[in-house]
Image (cartoon, rainbow over all chains, first blue to last red):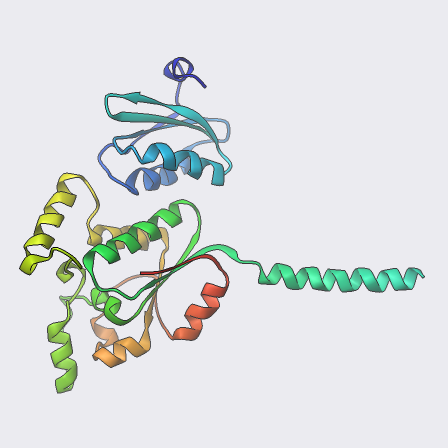
Amino acid sequence: MTAEDLKILKSDKVVDARGTACPGPLLAAKKAIGDVQTGQIMEILSADEGTKSDIPKWAKKQNFEYLGSIDEDGIYRLFIKK
Amino acid sequence: MSLEIEQQVKLLQEQLNQLQSKQAKDQISIIVFSGDLDKVLAAMIIATGARAMDMEVKMFFTFWGTAMLRDKNKPVNGKDFMSKMFGFMLPKGSTQLKLSKLNMGGMGTTMLKGLMKKKRVASLEEMVTTAAELGVEINICEMSMDLMGFKKSEMIDYPHLKYCGVGTYLSDADESRVQLFI
């Protein structure tokens, strides 16, 4: 998905992991995905650039669809479809 | 003829079962030999991260690594002279670990801990708590503990704590796809 598509995308759940460094965002995503139904969209907020590389790999392993990310002033918004 | 094929199929099935039973699991084995703060931190980050990736995690603490699993609030009695000496010289619990480099009499370690707080990196103590919640298994080498005179009664309360020998490590490592020695 392009950044424009992602900007108008409605997330079913938002995980705010801005307050943690590696592996915090990954752990937060793992914890939160349990509350998400199949087909729903989860958004992860992170201030750690490594998350941009980690989340797509995590999603692939868990068989979730990684939709893409948006950078907003050092905050990364990453989108996953369960 | 069909009997022959049947036999061959059976043989193949057996061989396949054998292969499947030998296949490594989605599991990581980590040996924590070091008792240095920086190295143990790396081990705990990998362990908790691996649980997030849904991998089974087996940690084996041996030699200097065992000292970080002591609980500084638990008193121990009945140690002989050498055990007392070792117990006194080695760190009692994770809060007393030092950096492997730039320790500078403890200044470096204090500075790093300050930096970690500032950069919102979880402390070693927080990571152990997270590991417990996530189901990271911690195995402690019985022989190392005995050598250093540590007693089970002075080890931390951790839900997935076991005492083992090298055989347990080898058998778990044999089933693990990823192995680390830290």
